[in-house]
Length: 155
Image (cartoon, rainbow, N blue to C red; front, top):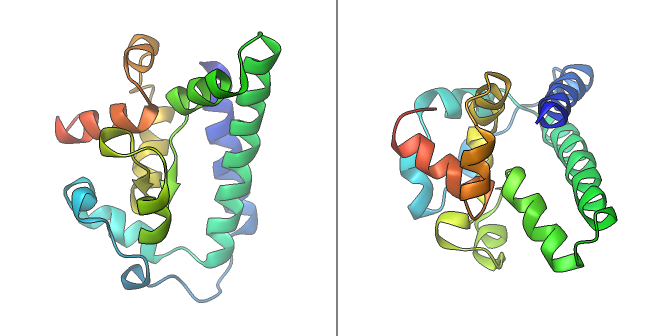
């Protein structure tokens, strides 16, 4: 669990390092899937509006590094490719920027990709240790747990 928090810290550091005064994103260019509209708050839209495309790229690089390390760890533990991918998905959130990406992902329903707009809130919840290991292990994916916690107003 400590390495998850470490990766969140790395993502925040990367975001800070690559932060720039370039043109910020327009949330209207990144529409929400109808099933996800109830997950996003005004504060999430405000945070997202202050990001640049470079910020998103830095977050993606940090996330992919951590997810890749998680996947390799599970493979080294002897899990199959599919099982390692599922285990990684159980402990890491996955996001979408476009509706096309959301719709074409193999995971749907509660396990579907999350809107990028809520990433900061999820990161803050992880840093505050709002996710307990037993909750993660009992959920099909981290995304399902995040949806559950948002709907219960825990994050």
